[in-house]
Length: 185
Figure (tube, rainbow, N blue to C red):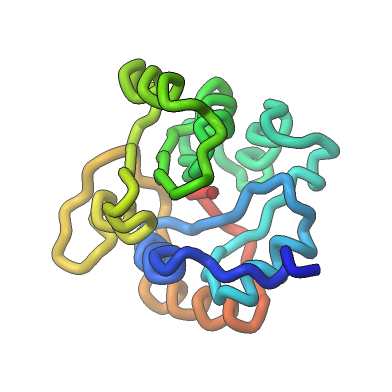
């Protein structure tokens, strides 16, 4: 039961809040929907949508999970960006046409140092956030979601207005999640 009440990384809530200014956000995890909802509620993470691999009867890295998530959102895979701290997850998403954003997190990556370096050199990760650069807050800054910033990186999706973004954040604190999303992590 402890897995339902883990704290988020300090950059996750403010970063997601900023990203919601231009994008809608969602989870995409092998955890079940109840677990993901509890985690998001406990950490007050303002995701617009909770999506679980259980929705597709498979687990990541099965392509049906990534393609199913895009379809569930009414988007083409290339209109989605997967944000993850696991290169194996990003490799599978990339093969399905997703844009990819890697967030280095201490003790999260399963790949050895050589495979990580190979991934960096091969260039299939569209945006690489190094440990200590600010995680989700840095993603928001690079997308131009932080106040006064210009965007760089992967293609921008359809976003939310300030009012909708505030509502999503308030609803997330209450465990209420919405239907649209274009950034998944």
